[in-house]
Length: 279
Image (cartoon, rainbow, N blue to C red):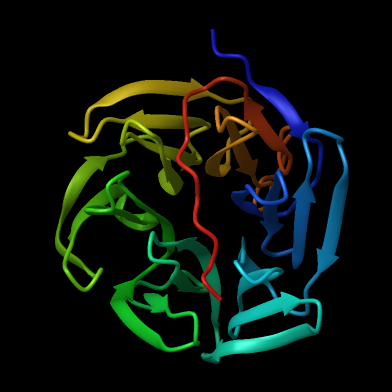
């Protein structure tokens, strides 16, 4: 039986976006509705919490230091000078959600409406200079995004579709030829990560599990969790073998005591080094 442990005991409303910061050897994650960015150093147990002025969908490390963040009204940067907007895009009733850094160092940001209306969200590519290009404009709840080890495939989740989709990546590093990789029948696919074997690990909101799919879309592993709403997963630790899983308690009448905590499965697999935002 797979051992699921508690990495960080917390009561996050909507824990999301675990990211291993290799330079600092720490885990970064957010509480979207709590407007908080958390860090955790598993070597020392040290934690930090930073409050943001808006709901924060994701926070990723930058090559120049600090963090790039996907906020309600756009993408911003926290560094030693404070905060500044990189790309501001205010749409009433909409907020930033999950985000990922591509192999070329660009930031891929998802948005969604608070009421989760179909077509109300987007997926965009943000260049290091703040130039933005909308890649998908008919999204409900933009979630997991990741790339194959060779960078030739991109995986993506719009949660209400209950699918993990796969694209080819063209010469301009843009996704083309969208097609289903796998469909989910229990819960909704949320955040994802890709391992060194090219397999896709997906957290199942309302499914109480993390699933691993092969590059051919075959389900080959299921990790059952004590909480109903895992939100995302990422490999971390010095050798990238520990799978960290964020969780949520929002909307639950009687959440499990660990809902909102960060869970970890030691030795779950082998992750890929994640690039920092090139800005």
